[in-house]
Length: 157
Image 1 (cartoon, rainbow, N blue to C red):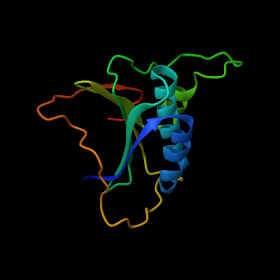
Image 2: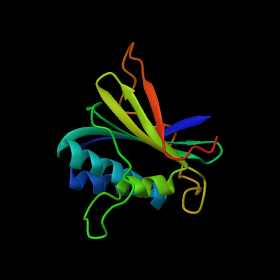
Image 3: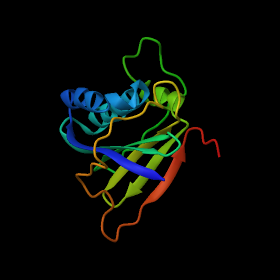
Image 4: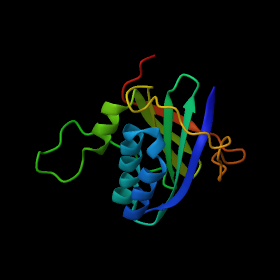
């Protein structure tokens, strides 16, 4: 059973990336890194100030799911085969692909969600402090809206 634990609504800015890292500290460095990379991708490809929603949930087995939703369903993440060693960007999805057991994109009407799942491993399987149940500040499924899912990366199934 998957439990929503944390939902953050923010504008994609460099300061917002730092805020996301701080807010997700209890989930471990892998979740923080993946969230930072996904929010940074929104800044890089859609621009600063774009509204995003970051959601993190953890199932009973310790697997963590991270989701970052933005309002542009047309701009999709692309995993690059190789990046020049002197390039200042282009490694974010490769890091996410290396850390996550699987990742993908879910399309909704007027938005997209890039998600990844991380197993309960070192730094990711720690117990979270009791926060009195789920925290939810936004509805993420549009009424009557239908979502489609595309999966990329490794899938252990």
